[in-house]
Amino acid sequence: MIEVVSADRCVQCDVCIKVCPTDVFDRGPDGLPAIARQGDCQTCFMCEAHCPTDALYVAPFSGPAPAGSPHTDEAALAGAFGEYRRIVGWGRGRTPGSRADRNHIFTERLRTAPRNP
Amino acid sequence: MIELDADVLVLGGGPAGAWAALAAAGAGARVVLADKGYCGTSGPTASGGNNLWYVPPDAGARERAVAERFEQSARLADRRWMSRVVDETYRRVDDLAAFGYPFAIDDDGVERRGSLQGPEYMKRMRRRVHRSGVTILDHHPALRLLADDAGTASGASGIARQKGGEAWTVHAGAVVLATGGCAFLSGAFGTNVDTGDGHLMAAELGADLSGMEFSAAYALSPAHGAHTKGLMMQFATYYTAGGERIDVPDPLGARLQVAELLAAGRKVFARLDRAPAELHQAMRDAQPNYFLPLDKAGIDPFRDRYEVRMVLEGTVRGTGGLRVTGDDCATAVPGLYAAGDVATRELVSGAVSGGGAYNGAWAISSGTWAGRGAALFGKGRRRPRARAAGSAGLGPGRLDAAAVVRAVQAEMLPLDRNLFRTRAGLRASLASLDVLWERITSEGLAGTGRERLRARSAAAMAAHARWCYRAALAREESRGLHRLEDLPALPRFEHRLVTGGLDDPWTAAEPREAAA
Image (cartoon, rainbow over all chains, first blue to last red):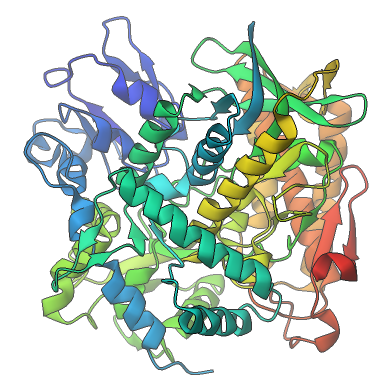
């Protein structure tokens, strides 16, 4: 689930509020996106992919991270922001990740694998 | 109050909705597309990606592909529809290349068009839809369809959930439903927008459904998340909590055996230790979103054993949905068309999961046909006075939507109820669900403003569950996704089952002429 919105990185562009398919964010009184409905987060990482300044961190768990977890600690996560956007290949100077797609290897392996009835 | 008028209204902005909007706009229709979430991120395709059933136009290869897949479908698919899907998908993927989708180039320099990375695919589709002049309404969930006095679908109304729940109405000459399947808020990757809202709206106008018994699609996920991507599990070895290896016959048989252990309350762990080291990077490049949640959790899936669980994907990767009555994906309701996972995918995948190649191809082709069909029907159609139809979950009342959802999930999520089905279990679930439905209609559901969506979705899931289990009881055999006790597949059930009704659900064998 979404755990961290970095006030330092966020430029208040509201993109995450717009793109979240389950409408988890509200615009907070300070202009920053607030995690208003964390329970609706489906851990799809789409906000992370779309955030232009890598200001969001979605933890890998389908429930909230426990209190004190490193997954809620911005300082501990410093290198973990923006990972999905990098993989998807969005952002200046990057190559779309789809160019490196190798699914054909694995669908072909599965199709031709010997099967027991 | 937001009021708009269009020739075609598309509900849902996943791939099926996006292709429908493009086709309708291409046919000269004025189009509005309303998404519950955001067109470009909504639904399992944007999150998860698609492998496509993609076969180049070689007559022999296509014939073989269709014949092979027909047998795999447990003989409930339709060869003519399968051929149509293969053909249409191939041509539309050409369009996608023309839109600039950056397809993979393999090690031999050959472009590979059989797989689509979700975020990239849907970002491109949104851009294309926008440039085609379609009006996109994000975060505008529909709650009801409009129908004229003759019962023809004539638009929809709903709420703008990022505008304080303000009401909206779009009057339209025709409507395409592309609202997805129903995964009962199980959390399965990207599926929480798929709560069966479209099925309920259509049923309220009299549409029927087909294949709802093929709704027991579950997928493996790391236990800490709900990332149901199965392709990499071909390299998995499974282990008990004590680290002992679980012997499984083959990668496809493993899923069921793992499910049996999980249903018995045992813990199961996986490790991708059958993957040759030289493939590790290709695996990551193919399915980055399988590895991302593992990496983040500090798990090296090639080295570490990680606990797995099974997550319900319902009719998202099951095949049941609205019955289509013509090549243009019309439904039983005039003016109402169905595209993607809201429609039955039995025509292509029969009794087996539509996940893995079929659904992606079906979204593209059915979306295109439904959009074109709706444009032909809706363009220039006079707009007689239309009224909003349907009421389940919309009248203000006492029931708590979250409690209704939990009650539905209690019947639908457990493996020993939905995957390993028994007649006694199905009857017990239906007894509970029927009482729940009666309370929903008589007591009403609490919720105002944007909370009306939760209430309506809860009602939609209850309706969906009742169709699934009614159809499951009617199919007294095991076939494809539907496993009933230890019954075998029986020749007398080699036909599709139609389901419908809300207060009094019914099932029937599909009439012969429709099965042709």
